[in-house]
Length: 79
Image (cartoon, rainbow, N blue to C red; front, side):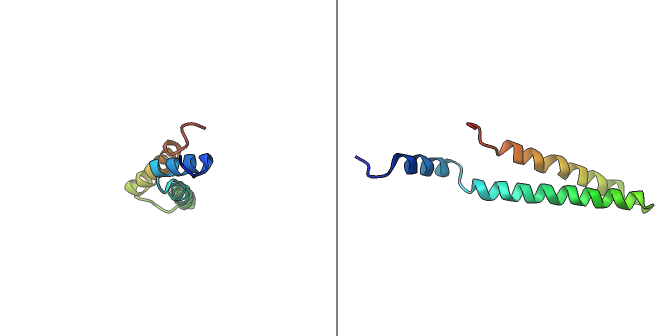
């Protein structure tokens, strides 16, 4: 018989299936915030009359889509 508490065993098995999940989610949140902050800064520069290259705004919009999507896909499936 195993001497490990069943709750602890369940938690360890879950962690072994998805290692570093909390670190990944923290990174997705930080990258998402950074992407939206960058987009806000670009939009404010455009509003003030500065010209922004189209490639830069497309990259920023892409990151504003990709990082929240990764955060959504990394959620708990059983919750």
